[in-house]
Every structure is written in C-alpha cells, then in structure tokens.
Image (cartoon, rainbow, N blue to C red; front, side, top):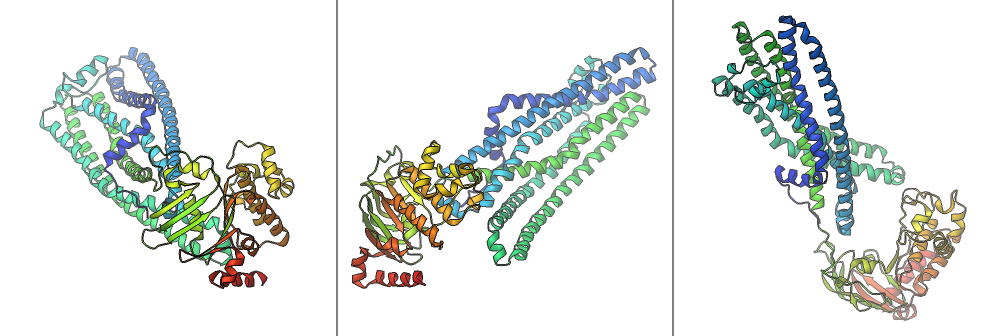
Length: 609
C-alpha cells in the first residue's frame, strides 16, 4: 500500500513552488514592478487631492488648476497602462505554471508502478492534476500580486505618516506634493510606537488562524478528490448503476460527500471570519484614534484642511490591505494545502525500477522460464508459491485453473508490472529484473480479457503501440484480425472515433481491434487473456480466426477459458492456490484423471450448456 509522505513546513512548500516560478522570473519581476508602480501611483492621489484643496480651493491659486488636472490625468493613464501590463504578465505566468506543473505531474504518473494506481482512486489523482494545480496557480500569480500591492501600500503609506524630516517623507516633499507636517509625527514619539504595536497586533489573528486553516484546506481538497472519484466511477459505470436501480443510493452517497465539504467550509468560514473581525476591530479602531489625533492637530492649526483630507484618503487606501488580508491569507493556506498534495504525489517513487546501467533486452526468440517464483501483492498473503515452468520458443501454452489460482499474476509478472519476492523470471535466459523494463515490454504483445480502447479513432487505436505506422500497415493488420470489413462500414472508416473506452463498438469488434493492435507491434512473445463473455457464432468464428493468425509463429501464453484453445495448446499448465499442480498436453493430463480432468469436464459441461 502506497502512503503519501507527511506534510512539510509552509516555508518548504513555498520554496518548492518557487522552482516552477523561476523559469519566468523576468516576467514575474516585470509584473511585480508594475504592481509596485500601481501602488505608488495610488499613493499620489492623497497628496494630490490635499494639494488641490490647500492651493486651489483654500489658497485660490487657480493658475495651478490646469497643471494639476494634467498631472492627475497622467496618473490615471499610467495606472491604467501599468494595470494592463500587470494583468497580462499575471495571466501568462499563471498559464505557464499550470502547464509546467501538469506536464511534470503527468510525466511522473507515467513513471509510477501499476500498484500505485491500484492503491489510489482515479478521482483523487484527477483532483490533484486539475483543482490543486489551479489553486497553486492563483497563489503564484493573483495572490502574490495582491500581497505585493498590499505590502507596498502599507510600507509607503505608513512611512508617509510616521517618517521624520530626514527620511522618506522629507524626500517625497521634494516632489512638491503637500504632505502632513513631518515634525508632527516623529518616529520615536509614543504615538508612533503605539501605531507600530497596533500593526503587530493586526498580524496575530492571521498567524494563529493559519495554524488551523491549513489542515482544514487539506481536508477540503481530499474531500473534493473523493467526490470527483465517485463522480468518475458512477458516470463510467452507468449501465451497472441503472441495472441495479442504484440511482437514488448513488445520489445519497454523493450528497453525503458534498455535505462533508460544506461542513469543512463552515469551519473554515468561522476561522477566517473570526480573524477578519479581530483585524477590522483593531485596524479601524486604530484608524479612529489616529483621525482623532489628526483632527486635534487641524484644530490647533498644526495641519491644514488639505492635510486632513489627504490623511483621510491615505488611511482609506491603507485600510484596503487589512480588509483583504483574511481573503489573501485564506487563499494562501488553500494553495499551501494544494501544494502539499501535489508534492506528495511528486515525491512518490515507483516500486519497479531499472537497476543502474541496465542493458536493453536483445531481440528475443521467446523462451520463458519461471524458476521457484514466490510472489505476494501485499507482502503477506502469498499469491504464487514456488512456481516453476518453462515455455519453448513458438509454443502455445494454456494456463488453466479456478479463479484466483494465479493465472493473471503470471502474466503481470512476465510484463514486470510487479517484482517477485523470491525466484527468477527469465526470457531467453535474461533475468527480466536485470534488463530495461521498456525493452522487455516492447517485445511482448498483449490482448486483455476486456479489450481496452482509447477515445480516439479506430486507426489511432490500432497504431497505439506503433504510432508511426502507415495507413496501409494498419489496414493490413486489421485485415488479418478480421476487422477491416466492419471498419470500412463505419461512418468515417478508420478515422471513426470509437467513443470512451470503445463504447460505440461491440465486444467482438473491440476484441478484433485489440488483436490488430497486437499484430501491428509484431511481438515475439504474446500474452492472451481470453474473454469469458460469450459472442454470437459469427463473431466467435471471426475472433478465433484472428487469434489463430496472431499466435502463429509466436510464443503465446494464454489464460484459457475456451475448450478449443485448451485442446490445441502445445502445453497446459494447471494452477491452483498459487501452485503449479499439473503440466502436460491435453491428452496426457486427461489420462491422469487428476485436477485437469475435473476442470475440463466442468468447463465442457458449461460450454455445452
């Protein structure tokens, strides 16, 4: 059983996320600069309005009206252009991060072993590749830009309010913008220290809520993954759902999962709301006290009306970061929860790996040898016990036995979907655990009991193992698989989409396309899992003819269910409870009157009936 690794710190998650941002640092820097400049432009409005009141309205210096209007228009145009550029860069960077993350996740998934996919629901994996990636995208772009904008507004705005004559306020005064009298706000007076203490208190609700929010966000993403998995399963298996009249039950199940998400969201809303309420009370309470202080300064004649209006606008701008802080922090925690799930997936290692510098398996003749093989899927319950068997090149060998005897497991091990605990499996004398997996699998053809087709065209499904194959080659293999005739009658011939999992085709048609796909690959070794589902006599004949052409001249391992296949096998291997109990030809095994004879008699009666 695969388990995801334990969560890492927020700082570590952010550091890992920066790896995906790094290739676009120039665009990101450009967007951040544009964001900072937009904030700087916004901070010009309070001083400009204050100057307008003191100079033009109170001072009656109307000659300054036109220059002020031109300057204001310039600020508006600059803000619009900078906002456009910031949004453009934001969108481009976000989409590139999404694409990079999904490509890396998809490539990593392709590297993982088959056992991983057996242990993890499809819906959860889909949720990580879609919803989680989008949450990370938002954090790396929109949330980051909003944070920078808020931070810049706070830093510059507070500096404007608190700085002494030798600091930033004094330098800004050289821009000929009327700002509050610097001597009123000394950096080291008690009022300033109270303001700084207030700012520190404003951050505490979010620091505390973050400890609660992140686990909640992770729970919500996991609940969403389970919901998507149920959705994917029920949609894919609608025939079974309807056949068993389970629509209402599935609806109740889905509603329960949706309700779980609502409960988590309710707890999250309480935490965010409480943090936001505390922040508003502290922030606007501080602003009220500050306005009282400024109002007294105006009454005393230390500040002008323009200074008061400027301060009001400035405080309004500074209130925006505090008003949006809870939302930004919530989104950040959601993104960190999503990033944790993404990196947990990326940190998964495949169970089955090539040894360092593993050689490629040379072109094979098709000799197979299992030597004292022991295997268990979970490491506890044995599935194969001391299995030894040999198949000579060109032989057709039938694996026979009751359900759960280990027939499919032998096929899985030959393809090295799993590694054995003891023993050795070799092809042409080469231990398959010592050569490259890909070189083994490329020389093995497989036709499954339930043919798997992709939701592409007939031609693309046949050429799945050999995508460079020409149309003529595809048609030749379809002809050999008795599929060409029905394909030609499809609406678009070989370019006809087969639907999801081939639902637009019959079982017999899907089987023949799967046979054509195996033929096109021209493998020396073939694994054939015969379908247990019955076909009409014509489809049965066509499929059996196609199987015969497919097996000709190839080493074939058949998980047999049909009497005709078993009777014509060069060798029959009888399995029971993970052990080989009999081997031989059809006639010799019948003559022994052992377990094979019993199985054959049972199968004969079933197929005769």
